[in-house]
Length: 156
Image (cartoon, rainbow, N blue to C red):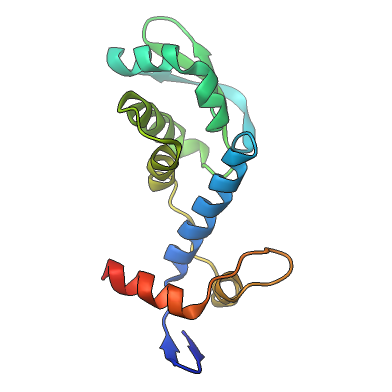
């Protein structure tokens, strides 16, 4: 919770973390692609035929979304790296979400939203959430409380 001259503000730290991740991914994507983390051991993922076809048609695009993978036999792909903020345990869900969005010809923002939906963030501490929404020199991110309140009102 926080307070400004207009009243009490309640900040959902999980929603704040999700928004921060989405904003960070949007900026990274615009700059060339999401940062990745290499897997120590490749993860083999079996895809249904329709998603495997999407994979084959979009291998280059997948790298911008943080996935480095290559075909690996009958309907399988070998995943070598994934988005840096995605847990390895969620890699298959993330890859499938991106492939489904690409199959639906979703725009980049919608595809990032699909990926973010399978990468639930840990909650920010209250001080991190306040810093996120009040802004500071290190993050360069600023949101005024009136905007925050109107967005919260729209989602309730």
